Structures are given as structure tokens and as C-alpha cells.
Image 1 (tube, rainbow, N blue to C red):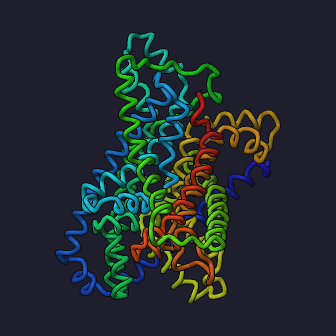
Image 2 (cartoon, rainbow, N blue to C red):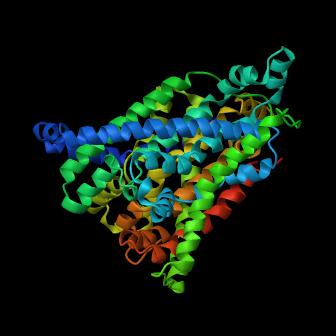
Image 3 (cartoon, rainbow, N blue to C red):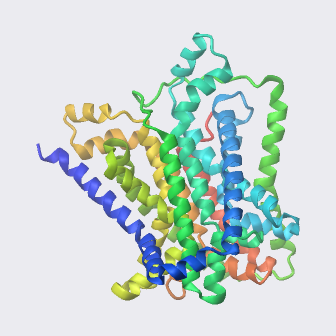
Length: 508
């Protein structure tokens, strides 16, 4: 009787421990803020500059999250539920922008024209870079929906649009809100792209404080505002998600879902998707090719390029596998157990994702110097920072997949003689494999292109593609920076393609 409780207890303990580790940067910000004193804190927060940064951050968040949600859902419906020609190709092309780091998107546009600098350019370029965070989980949810629900609605006289809004949209709520939350938190922590586009937000201001004046008190005051914004976003997502249940019986019907014919709209839809593909993929890749081939400052040092590539790949794989493994028990706890403790554990892991990488890195530096100096500037500490920063990328995908697996299947497995590990291996993991695949892909791409935490925490002598790219881009030597940016795209693109294919995307 004791054996079945071992796995749940171990999973619960691991989930809580993971949540506590991800809260280290928050503790650092809070302690530093309190030690600054209320009078000083008030003076630092009540400034016109803070109001300007708050306005810039809010209007950028609203515009980018809304645009990403609208296009992400539309694109997911087109590839999964319509008669769109070449659906497999479009499924891959719509996910592919994830392979290009957002600061490389900005690099490509800024090196083409300075007209994109400012608010409008930031909304356009960041949306083109971030919409796959909505498209990916929504498309996965659509693929996993039982088409009998939609067929039943149509048999009752519902048209395509009414079926979508009344039957499909409520089932997409966890995936859609999860994707919007990812975009929100990712944008709160965005640095490189907005620095290049010269659009100041809280994150860029914090970076400037640390780099130019080393004014830690002012920077941590700004970071505390970011934490508040993150908490508000988490509460909003939690409220909107509600308490609905989305599980279904079985792994899905072997019959494909009935697709809505686009008819005369097909050419218009294809033209719109082609325009998005050109802006989000074609232009960045074309500019990278231009600077690699023509840039006068190009001087590729092949051994260094190979070394930084191997370093980025190894760190990306290690970070992705660790984050996915740790996110699984947290998602399981949130979906299977519920309750206040489970909710707090899950929500806690999102907080650090809203903090700039430099704040997460400095918090780890401060703590390790005081209590764990032997691991200062080591690979394990760098991987810890990656897990803290990108944990929600894995959690959202796994949670959405687990939400569609009915708990009764676990009970059936145990009633047939399987132990907890047997049920996990033979029942749960095969059903959530698409979510695990998406989690690995998202975290690998994020880690292999991470910049600020890597600059501060990487062991001496370790260089990645992102750090080499940034050192050249800061000095406006576009030709020298381009090979490292191109290699980041090269190692991210196959990973994105292979894992999303394994997860079921791009298949007819």
C-alpha cells in the first residue's frame, strides 16, 4: 500500500524544491529593496523617468500580446482546422521564427533601416519574434482536441464560426492563456531587441543602471516594479483560466478532424501567411546572408566559431533536459492535485521569468559568493540560471498536455497491476509526449541564444554564439557579428523542426 504514494510524494517534494530555487532572484530583489530603506525607495520610485518607463512597458505589452494572440490563434486554426494548401510547410514556417533570437530580428531590421527604431518598430518586430509562443501551444491543443465535439456541434446546426467560438475556443483557453502569459513575461525581460530598437523599458533601464552607473539601489527599485507587473500578470491569467476541466478519454480518435474549406479566401490567406513568413524569416535571413557575404568587417575565425557553436549546443541541450525534467512534477502537481500549495508552487516558478537575466545572474553571484563560493562561475551555476529563467517555457507546454489526460487513466493503469513508475512510463508520458517535445524545443532555443546571464555567469574562457555576437553588434561591426547570428539560427532551426515534427506539427 505504501508503494503508490512514493512517486506522488517524491514529485511533490521535487516540485516545491524547484519552486524555491526559482524564487532566489525574487528574494534577492526584496531583501535588497528593503535594506535600501523606505525613504530612499520612495524617492527612487516616484520619478518622471519611472512613469515614462511604466507607460512604455504597458503599451508595448498590450500591443504585442494582443497581436501575438490574434495571429497565433488564427494561424493555428488555419493549419489544424482549415483546407489550407501546404499545411505541413506552413506549420514549420510559422514555428521557425523561434529559431531566430529576438535581438537578431532587431539586428537584421536595424542594419537595414533606422526607421524601425521606436514604438511602432518595436511592436512589429517583437510580435514577429514572439507570436510562435502562442501559435505552438494552441496548435498542439487543436491537434489534441476530440473532433467529435465539433462534429456534434455541426450536427446540431452550428456553422463553422459558431462551432469555433462555442466549442473550440473554451477548450483552447489554457493553451491560449499560457501562450499569452509566456509572451507577457518574455517581453518584460526582453533586453537585446529593445536596446537595438532604442525603445526604453524597465529592463533596458535596469541594464543601463548596472552598466553605466552601477547604481544597484535604483536598478533594484526598477526590478521590484517588474516583479509587481509579473505578479499582476500571473493573477490575471489565473483568474481568466477559471476552474474548467479539459481532459478527454483516450489518446484521440484516429479520424482526422473535419477541415473547413477556405474557398475563395484561400489566395488571400496564402498571401497573408507569405507576408508574415517574409517579414519574420525571409528578411532576417536575407540580412544575415548579406552581412556574412558583403560586410566589409567580416573576418570569420573558424576555430572560434566552432568552439562557440559547440558550447552553445551543449549548454542548450543540458538546460532543456534539466528544465523539462524539473517542470514535469510541477505540472503534474498543478493539474493532478490542485489546491493552494499546488497553485503557489506553480505560480512561483513564473516570477523569475519576468526578471531581466542580469538581475537573475547578479542574485546568483551575490548568494554564491556568500554561501557557495566553490560553484561561483561554474557550469552548474550557469545551468541553474538558465532553469530559473526559462522554466515557464517548459511548464506551460507540459501543463497543457497533462490537462488533456484524464486522471482516470492513471487509476485504470494501477488497477491493472502497474505501479506508479509503470503508469508514468506506459500511460502518462506517451500521452504528454507532444507537450514534452514542445518544452525541450522552446527551452533549447532560449538557452542557446541567451545573452545577459551568460555574460555574467559563464566560467572564465567560456564563450557562446550570443556573447560573441553581442560584442561585435555593440561596436556596430555588423559583418563580424553576422556569422555568429547565422550559426545561432542554424543550430536552432533543425532542433525546432525535428522536435515539432515529433510533436505532430507539420503532418497532414
